[in-house]
Image 1 (cartoon, rainbow, N blue to C red):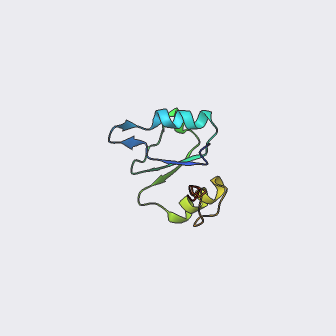
Image 2 (cartoon, rainbow, N blue to C red; image 1 turned 90 degrees about the horizontal axis):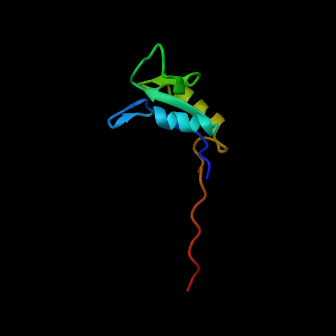
Length: 87
């Protein structure tokens, strides 16, 4: 299945998320950065991506989620798994 959108932190304990950002960009997946870092010049993988700093502006994050996904915020964004047939 295709990912509807991604919320990324750029600097993780096990490395930067730039390879993931590159892959998401190649697939046309909308993304937003949520980070404690305030970079004046983000890596090219994040060029043009909205950057939210911590503490997050909840309204901006909610607007991104609503615009990026097929479902309004607060509703289920996936189908429940089918139950196995009754025996």
